[in-house]
Length: 210
Image (cartoon, rainbow, N blue to C red; front, side):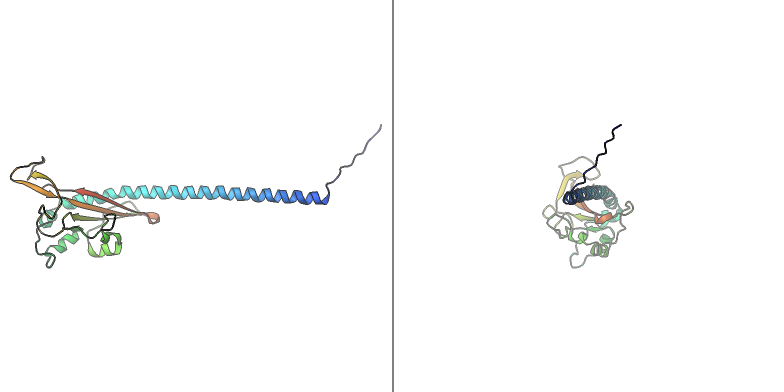
C-alpha cells in the first residue's frame, strides 16, 4: 500500500501580518458600530422619556385652570375683584388679591404673553400667597389670574376687554338695558416637572354676575 504524506504550506510571515491587521480593523469597525447603535438607543430612550414628562406636565396644567375657576367663584373674588378705586397709590384690597393669585389689571408680560412675575418661581411665591394647586408627584403648579384691563377700578369699555353682555343672573347674551358687560380674565398656569420640564398654558375666561 502506497501512502502519500503531504505537507501544508504555511503563509509567509508578511502575509500573516497583513491578515492580523485586517482582523483588527474589522474588530474596531464592529466595535464602533456597536457603540453607535448603543448611543442611538440611549438617545431614543432619553427623548422618549422627555416627551413623556412634557406630556404629563401639559396635563397637569388642567389643575391650575380648575383652581383659577374655583377662585373666581368665591365670595372674596366677586366682592373684591374690581371694586377698589384707590390704586395704585392706596390699594385697600391688595392683600386679598394676593391671597387669590389675582391682579385686577394686566401685568408686564414677555414677547410670548407670559407674565414676567410668573417666570421666576421665587419672585412669584414671594408676591402671591395662594396655595399651589394639587399636582402629581414631581410636578409643581402655579396659577395667576389677571383681569384684562389696563388699569384698576371699576370695569369700563375703554380700559377693559369685555365678553358679550349678559343679563344679570341669566345665561343668554343680551343687548338691552340692565345687561352687564363682563370683563375677561387671563389665566396663566406654569407647571414645573421632572428633568427641568416647564410648561405654560393660558386660558381666557369670564364669570357671570349674580
